[in-house]
Length: 357
Image (cartoon, rainbow, N blue to C red; front, top):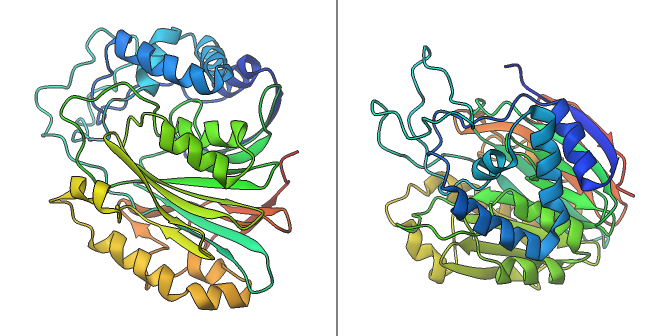
């Protein structure tokens, strides 16, 4: 499958948004290196929690399923992945099982589960000129082929523009018409031995973008829902309110707010959630975070955040393994401008993107 950097510009009911995306995207299936999908009752419990926040999003998943000839229940099970653990990839001769296939359990020859290695980095600041800016590199293994940019104007909810990966309905980062920015980072953390149903990581930025107008509302949403996966979320709005929320299925904490510079990578800092990451290799993540904070004063003064996103010495701009920058984003929430780079920003041209309205 070739890399999918498609651009969508869609408006209408959520079902139609899903129908259009499903029709133009590779058929959704469970990658061989994911854990087996959860039982249907687990996924249905997750769906109830999603519906309490923004029920139309489930209509989009129904449209996506219909466009691809899949059952809604199978798509829902795939969306509500119980764990971020990864199995070793299947041998090349083995086909990736489709969602509807009866044999969804892990193959016996696969290696024990491991945790994903990702290198996402982000920051937001209030500049010396008063402008609120945010930058973000999404880093992961190049095996993630779906890297779509979506500009949506739903009948219910805020318009937004942002990026999604392989799983339907979600958003990995984005900005809405109110000037609210959010992005996510997988946290290198243990998970509960017995996961409880909750809201999947990739749906939370989407829910924030469509239902929230500012950072305060976004933080409220992220701190009251039940999280299915361990992730960090960086949030900023055009008023200059910045925050980082560290979320684990068993605890959620706000680690930065009321500051003029915030940053996030792939580890927890608050002691209530940091205790879940024992045994994890955090050196790369900690180094990137320290480098961003070391540049904070310069970034606030200069007004140009591009060099920080293209910085190889800090590891923010990556080119290998789980630290491969698949896309980059920079936005000035005050000037209402957004740009994306399809790949590492050190070698890819920036594309200006229309503000969502």
